[in-house]
Image (cartoon, rainbow, N blue to C red; front, side, top):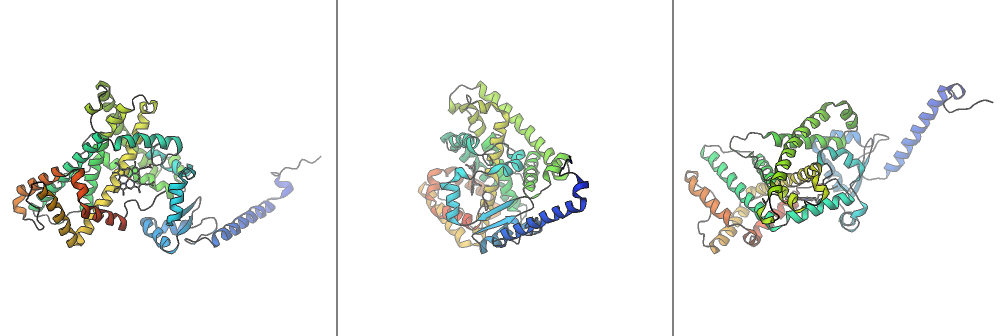
Length: 406
Ligand code: HEM
């Protein structure tokens, strides 16, 4: 009896196999063509989808996506290996993010690409792990001790920036990259907020801090994975971006693990009185959740820290940069904010309003003035500053800090 096998080339013939493969590919192309023909979005070629157009727009992804979002409420971007659906339709967004969010997890693809950096943190976890992250952060971020600690450190950061700018101005420096100043200020503040450590990247010498460099590089290299179909191969062979990612992650993690260990030892020596513990997020989580087995894991704590730093730093830089840009390009808005501030401060018995167009010779007076004002700011005074609030929210509406959500 003849044993027929599909692998028997002699029976089936190599030429026939080629026919079968070509036939299958043709069917796949026709299927993809029909599937994508009617879908709105960038042109999708068989097999490769919109990969080529995507690659040619890598440097301006946001503008590229926006171009299609202005034409279609919902559209598809297919690539070599995956399919992305983008929407700006508020009904769909409410359905996905609010009404039915449990059915729309971040998924395995995103988590496999981003886990190296975010670990099991809030940004990429789903289900039980996401709820754990959320519970840990929610209880602490909004606790009164942490809120006070956070406000104080932001006030100090504001004073530091003002002093630095006034010193540079008195040396005759008239131009400065403010986005870089905000980047340093936001990183220093969020890091102190989370870990209780001052990185001091904000100084007139503008030195780069190794940890910040490693963190930012690791983040950029991780993001590259989302549009590089060969990242797994590169990771296996430790090539190019994957080698850079590994090196920076190792540096970043070692730095964080040392801080975690230090805080664990400090908290061990504390009694249970929460008010005696530092206001930073890490100390408070270690103390408040000390019976939670997940908190015993340094890896889990590292993931919480990395996610919260990432959540706080970029958003703050974007919001500050655009708000200041808008204020500078609309001088009447600046005048109104200063008037609002003066009115509130006068109500507190401080009547030396900061003037627009200050004379840089009087540096000490100016810095003291800023410091006095800054220390009077608290949640009550800030909640009276409706015009300032409207300015910031309008800038955020026009230039959202998080322009794309997943
Ligand atoms: C102008 C400032 C900020 C803006 C515009 C902003 C905006 C947003 C947006 C749109 C999301 C949802 C992202 C998504 O699901 O893809 C988000 C998530 C989050 N943000 Fe912010 N954010 C800001 C500042 C901060 C700061 C300072 C912190 C922490 C100190 C923070 C912590 C978080 C956390 C933990 C999440 C994840 C929440 C979750 O998944 O449940 N954000 N933020």
